[in-house]
Length: 213
Image (cartoon, rainbow, N blue to C red; front, side, top):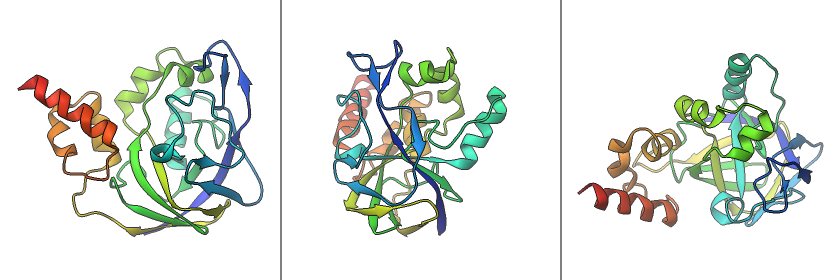
């Protein structure tokens, strides 16, 4: 299965009262860039991260969002959404990001990436868009985009193919994890079938299941 990168996006420093960082700074306002960009194990070279307690790190070094899902949102809110408008580093085309399996690997440019977890919407995201009920609407829509580990550092650029080179047999998807952790807790037991899911999420799932029992 092969799609492509529609764009690679980097964020500078945005200072705003809605920014999640205590200093009032955010890197959510990402813009497409020309030329290759280095994806490192700890993040994207040249990309500002404001609130490191919740963003960045090996399990969410890169964030990808599908161009097709962005088009749905543009129609929903009645305005255009440029690449990077979700705060994503990689805007993909013809890649089923929501149905990507936890642990599946993408060959992109000279990098090798691994799908880890869905994005959780936050007040910074809602403030950036200026849509007060965006968190609720984003949760109901359940097309959250995917965070990625960098298994092999390398450079990527707009137009590069995105090839799924490995897909775990457990079949637990980004969409299932997002729905299980939000509106469909009956899906929680299934998440433990995915050993590649970040340990922090696995521990949270186990606590929730223990509480239910």
